[in-house]
Length: 355
Image (cartoon, rainbow, N blue to C red; front, side, top):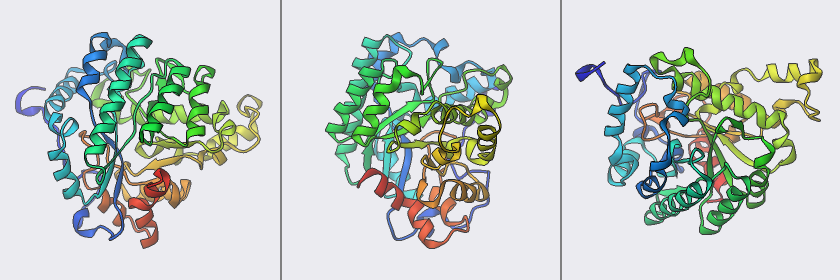
């Protein structure tokens, strides 16, 4: 796939029909994007020389066609992922008032030596804070943590919360270790103590030779990674031990919300799946927040039914090609009542982030 056969689109999704764009159909209340990315080049200069491509799962299972499209995207998005002017224009086009910014997954530096990760992550977080502060009317920031060291992660989280960031993005695993591993207990304790929002974001699937073609490493693998991470956080008891944890899983929370009954059945039917949890697994699942990046109205309605209208928040995944570029219309046109539309479009984010 070369030349004019290689393309990306950054426009309203092909997954649903479109009526009036969100800019025209938006509610009068706040509209807030809970899921977008900003890159900080200064952090990349520190960590970049230590990042080995073979440690990034998103690149493990890609054929030549996918590599070509990804390379084109790398050339497409710098003005939007590093800069501000185009981003502000796009926010206006999408009918969005404010946006939560967080690092691109590749700037969660779990795959470099810990001392390098600590240094680069501080630069990353300071840069994100500065980006948001320049237009506090438009942006709120999440940072990252060097999660390969649970204690260092806790310290960095505490530092950035004092600086005014609202929490952190974490990947779905730490170099193959689950987020529920005891090594990361200090981080989860700090997240609950500080009231930080923790956004779980995938970066490709860790196992899956069958995902090599058609960008399946992302299309199937990213939601599956989130699904697995949530399973472990529930069954290993992280959500039981930290009932006040604020956790948001992107891309609609992966696949678990669409088949949640299976975990309750297994919990009740088998001793090896009971995990000594005092409540059915879906009781913990309902504490999780999810975004609207599921592209179709029926799936959005299903998220509302599964997680509750107060736990679904508008998101885009801006500025990547897998983003929803008409997110407000997605919510407005889903057949939900006006109160629910206002909550999903911005009210829930305002409450969750304490704005």
